[in-house]
Image 1 (tube, rainbow, N blue to C red):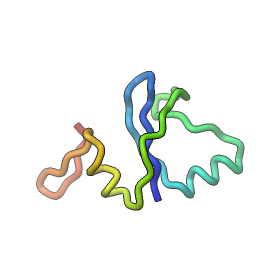
Image 2 (cartoon, one colour):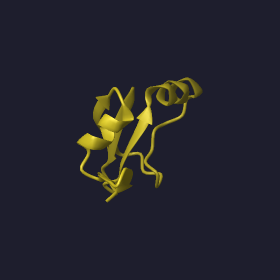
Image 3 (cartoon, rainbow, N blue to C red):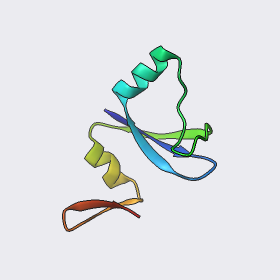
Image 4 (cartoon, helix red, strand yellow):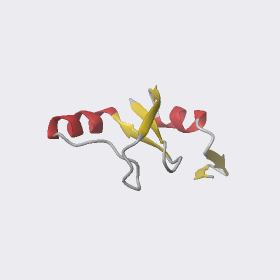
Length: 69
């Protein structure tokens, strides 16, 4: 499963696997966006990464390749 997040400071969207979240929680680490901001909002939880990217507006499939807009 994957969890999608949106940063409230830079509006960046990203997804993290739930196993990665569990490991970070056990190690005592916090979740941050790619630029280091910690003010994030949980968008949703998805079964597959493909479904997660299709429901977000920032990813588009062109000629079989997924691109970020």
